[in-house]
Length: 256
Image (cartoon, rainbow, N blue to C red; front, side):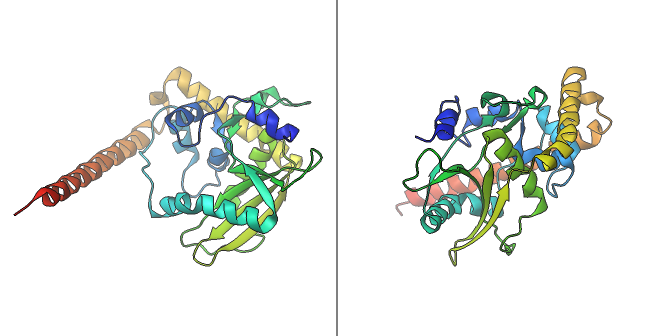
């Protein structure tokens, strides 16, 4: 087994999407949330992420776009491996501090990431260069070959840093046509170093409000009210779904 794969597999980890994995993520700034910490995520703000890390967030049960992505992710990886002659290795959440490294920054021990995998050429030896992969299956957006949306760049760069990978493929897949759009990345330590203080400042703020209480945040009333409203709406949705489900069961059992 390749030394890097063996090293990462030896790290205790939980299956992605499992309750244990979700709980573990709460203790770190994960690479998928990095764009929010930088203020470049169009779907979640900096302050919303602070609240999320302090235990207050809107429930997320998925939507048509995320369900589409989850449905076709495995197919995308299989297609990529077939076309590129690679074998993918899957992992759970990998903390930065758990990967042995020389010259690491202990002030970044709050970072962690869950890459979609680390791929190696079929039949390679220990000298092969692993390729970290990040997969997206956009529902409406048309991918452009060689172009990665800005809010995913931080996810790819931090996952490479965390997993000690020198290169990555950002993969977008259209299942209808089986098209692959691949953007090759290389670890950019200048990019990371230029933003490291922003990640550290964000985590410092999270720890500050964990200590003082998130209720001391100046936007507490507004964000808490929005989250409470979303929770009520989600509970109502679940109630309606349960009614429809029960009605279906009654119809199925009707023998008249």
